[in-house]
Image 1 (tube, rainbow, N blue to C red):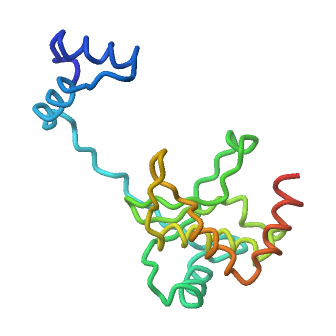
Image 2 (image 1 turned 180 degrees about the vertical axis):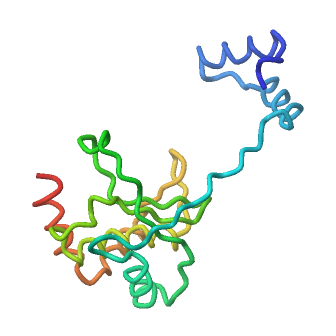
Length: 171
């Protein structure tokens, strides 16, 4: 879109980058006028795979949804993709993508060495994200609000799951 922007718009962008204070009225106006030039990309198709070697995520999800959420969580759940390059980096055990209403669980958890209560806790945590509304904070959206953390402690094996995580994943 900005390949066709005039020098006034580009100058305003440069000033904003340098100072971060000035309003960007010309930039906003330019974007509104040219929004149609942005390609609407279709989201990639989802490949839902809830059955793992040791755990069936859909079974865990359904049981947790009934027990804690009265069946109100409508998200899909799937194992994430295995990526050996990211194995050493900070490990993300689960995620919830609100715009696609999908929960992804890291496939490293599909192991006989991972206790059922721990994977249930990770699924429950992500289901809380799916069920929770966002709380605004000064820095934007707050996804782990006090209410979220309070509800997280309602999980039947909360302390046990945290202890296992500390002794295994964060060691």
